[in-house]
Image 1 (cartoon, rainbow, N blue to C red):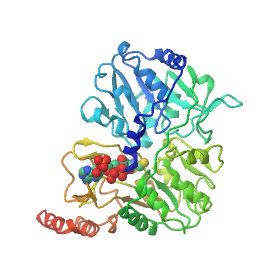
Image 2 (cartoon, rainbow, N blue to C red):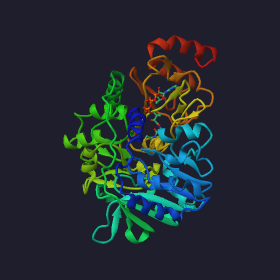
Image 3 (cartoon, rainbow, N blue to C red):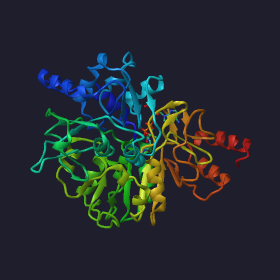
Image 4 (cartoon, helix red, strand yellow):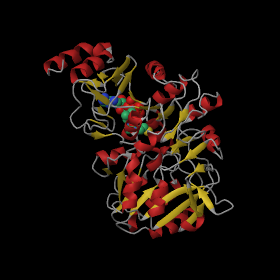
Length: 445
Ligand code: COA
């Protein structure tokens, strides 16, 4: 996930559903009466957040105490995490987005570090029971099934295991193929509210991100199967793949850049060794162009993350190339991606799932791609040690390729000394001497 994300959160933090008829809001508040103090409520994720239901839940604050609201990364507002509502609600972020980051870091909310692939099993096991699941769906089809549309990641499993499922029915949610349906009889209440889905604005990649895209593209052979996250670096990689052939996609999510490659005939899924002819994803983040692309498109199948992100499933795709980003990489190859020092920034998501899956895949390559510096070039993201409090997401035994705008370091099977040399070579030139000095002091080189 990259830069665009936060800006986007802020942008439509203000775009609450407009002019909701009071009777629809009242209906939603009424449906939410099944939530009792002490319950856990799961909220559908990404750009599929049923915002009306979230607002309706927050309106019950005075009547509720100790309700845990749990979710992956969500866009839009998270009124349950607002200061002052601590007695009523506590957020439990399985991936921390910008809208709950303050609550988590101010001690008003929680973060649960977990591999994305393992969340559905955790829910199924009963160790993480869900009382009520709030989900946005399409209207029921001919046989009574609602599609979960652009988000199936963990929402399907949460709904299957919840005591109550409340559905926000939106005609503008695209109907999609895959394992992504709930029957209308599985809902306690269905509330109709048609409205456009929020969209994630795209930003042009920086020069550094374009270079990273080019270096990553060199590691992608024809016929490869891709996993890419959201944002400028993945988009820059996609933009550099225009002359490849027969690419496939098996990923937790994709965005608009992938659609362009399908239209160019570059992604056709013809060389896939699993799910031939299908783009497999668990959610998408992007624009209406993307939503129209996935709508009733037999090329695309949405599956829950215990399928898409299972490293053993991922590994059945030959030439699996995974590209994920990071906050910091230390000179031994430890990758920090969910925190900036002690501050929680995001989550594990599918990074380790795909690093492990791609490393087991025949011809696979797990890549960590990041700009060499942060804060307008003032700090190096390649560091002698991780910052105090920073958490390791991808361990130094898991890491393979690290890519910056200065090149690619291959670390797997290499000694600490070799890693330090390789990483200093791809650090920003301005920091290389400093890094060499620190590495020498620590006897790394
Ligand atoms: N020290 C201090 N601040 C840093 C920093 C560092 N080493 N590295 C980044 N930052 C700051 C940036 O300046 C930026 O701050 P801003 O929002 O004020 O501009 C912020 O952290 C985000 O950095 P950026 O480079 O824009 O991150 P990103 O949006 O490209 O996302 C990750 C990178 C690692 C946070 C993101 O990929 C992520 O959350 N990964 C989680 C795991 C994963 O990869 N999952 C699978 C993908 S779906």
